[in-house]
Image (cartoon, rainbow, N blue to C red; front, side, top):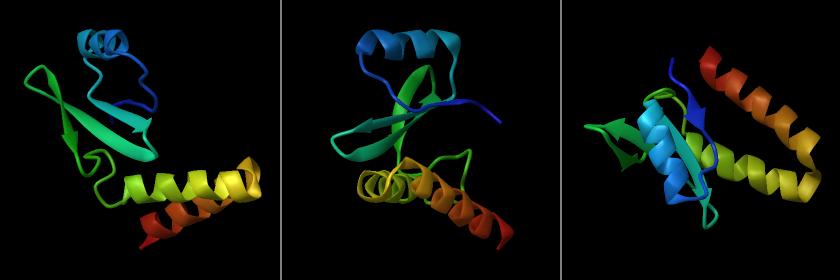
Length: 90
């Protein structure tokens, strides 16, 4: 399984990840999670994560961040864990 980067803040950082060959980047910007996959030595934006094909990662992350703002970080993370476990078991 490849590694994923959750936050990229500059073009310089993107170039660094490209040089390292990081296969998948997750970028949260403008209240949206964007998934970038390394293909042909460039990052291409995709709707889903090939690492987690069965999970709707962008919508899950949006929900967790919303819950975190409303209820706090710990309850949001507990709910996130339960949600992922339930999805994996089915």
